[in-house]
Length: 479
Image (cartoon, rainbow, N blue to C red; front, side, top):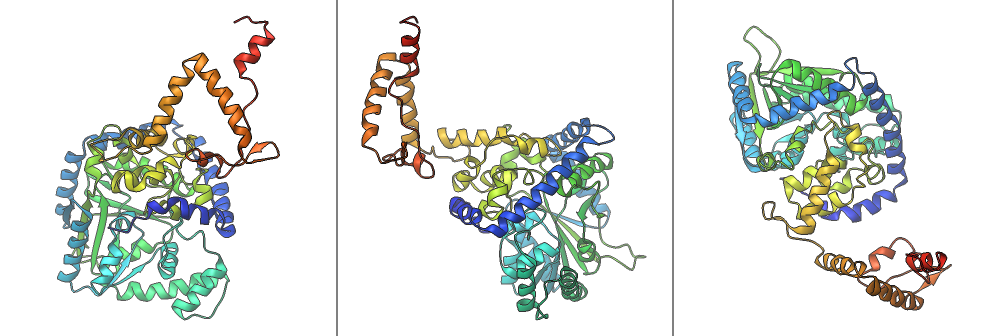
């Protein structure tokens, strides 16, 4: 499994907020993609109803996952491919390593894949002595820099052209330049050599069609087609939920995915892949393997409260409008999945306790649901995760957090239900606050365990009288 650093959410978020380059990049991204996506939604030929219909397609597929996966496997095999089911991340990695050994693979080129990031495939291949090259330009930059991506679709937005120029000069041995076309040419030259010498191509899967036995990949650079046609072996990784029943449903979802991801009517390169090259075809791999990964998805599937999360198509639209992501970027989330989608799926896949800060860090403003092409109710699931953190949940192995906070709220509930007790509490608080550090009439610091309220802001002091006391005085004692 890839290393999960969600426990460092607050620390990394603080560094991100203080990074002017990242702040500028995030502001630019959200100001462009968020409005562009909304404009496309508003002008759908079928109207806004298409988003609800597509949500229904995804939900129907999730509810019938066992039947559709069986049909997909049968049809891929009819097309000459091989299908593997992996219950865990380790099984998925081991299957890929075995395929690589069987074909004496020394070099691998990869298209961008969230699932392979999730299971830590690159590290495992490198440990096995296999050279691995990411071929999406953003992922290529991130790999050279040995960093985690900042965005699901645009992983290297936090890098300036000067930083990329320096990185290419150091890692590729090219003359330093900060000219974007020249940098693109340098990357193309380096990657073309890798494409031509690779033994295996690895990709993800945006959607798979059970009816035809084809997986679909979408990109804007053409790198995925190079990864799937030039090497002698193609291995595709697919989260088990990324499936639809037929091509009609697939077409609608792919259109919406492109709108959500990059504000496009459709991605530049949409490829349908179902097996190895036919005998009379000169292009294409000799072998095609599809690895269908569970790795915690069955547990989500079994929980009606969170099953809707499996409808997600990882387009990144929610990142392009989220005010929290717009300040902290993707690296703070500590996994392959960032933004509102990461705040839900990372705790569900890797442990709610391990990623507790993610779901409590979101604002619940609802912008993610409005931006999602399928209108997935992420705020509802964020609240559900918070409830489990507060109350505990045996099914998700969640220990209740903040017992002291819970006790304080229970005590407060009892106080406010009794007028005389509340008035006495208020008077005591009014007197005690005078000994607290103050500045310009504001309380600067509360004592433990209330100090969290004043870590980043000052508080207005209690008034001399409660609202009810002032009201009674104004109304001459009338209730």
